[in-house]
Amino acid sequence: MTPSFHPHLGRGIVLAILATLCFALLDTTSQYVGSAVPVLMAVWLRFVVQTILTAALLWPRQRQALFRTRAPGWQLLRGALMVTSGTVAYLALQHVPVGEFTAILMLVPLGITLLAALLLRERVSALAWLLVLGGLAGALMVVRPVGSDFSLGMLLPLALVVINSFYQIVTSHMVKTEDPGSMHFYTGLTGLVFGTLLLPWTWAPMQEPLLWLLVALLGVFGSLGHYILIQAYHHAPASRLTPYMYAQIAFATLGGWIVFGHTPDIWAVTGIALIALCGGLGIRLRHG
Image (cartoon, rainbow, N blue to C red):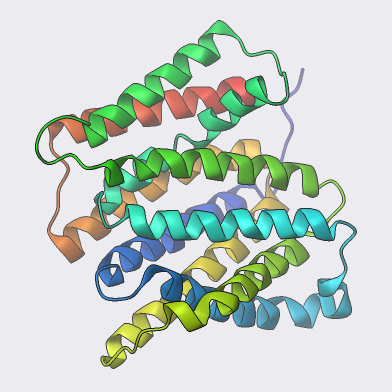
């Protein structure tokens, strides 16, 4: 069979890599402000900026179509998963360096394989199961759940993998009927509504203007990253772009070194390499 040809594949790859840069900046900034800004307040401010920025970017092209949806329940579920994901990620980054955190998140494709087998009753090959176990072994090398330095918070990235896997499965179901731009808008709006309801119990004054700027950048990086990724998928299919998402590990590790002076040790590097290998093979296996 002749391989499918995508004339804009190169443009899609560049956009996908730019999206990973935005996500790495989001996580690095989250780790920086994590000790100074309460988690739910930071999540609320992020979604304020994300909702406004998403509307500003998409309204000129979509107009009223931006608000149309055939599946409000699914939109609510997807938004709730994104809020949960953002909250858990913010907490996890207080326990795990950003580079290692990002590497563990690259287990999401393998997590989708696991959930597809358990929930959707999809048939999974022995090789796919082996890759799932290999990816988990790599994650355990990164967090190393033994010794005096270990805390339960270091396992939060693994919980985040499960949440994000559910999020991706819900998204793959919704794209059959929903516009990607509308999905992105309603995700931010859901986060904004949830955060606003909790705001009276989560608000804390921030005296430093720099903190306000950095928390606002959480929304900018998150919104731009998802918007750019949507544009990338307009130029090339997800199966061709997903391997390039591993660039986020390099960007996040670089961010951790520049901002925090942290470099992964040999065990973490080995675990990251194993995650990347198993995740990359898993993507290739899943998409043929």
